[in-house]
Image (cartoon, rainbow, N blue to C red; front, side):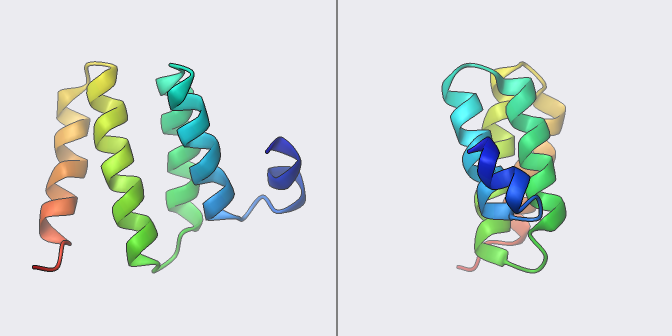
Length: 82
């Protein structure tokens, strides 16, 4: 995966995949950093942004940062089509 990011550092999907990989290993702080990179290059891809905000809410909750988790949860609530 690092090779993909080296070749295509602007790939939101690659950063998102790496964030999930890190989270599965319990490296939540690193995963959050990777997800932030993914969000920075996701542009207007609403599906990817929703996925990333959901991920960020779970990751922040996992490290005990409920305030940040809530910010991402609120974004989801405001940006979910019903």
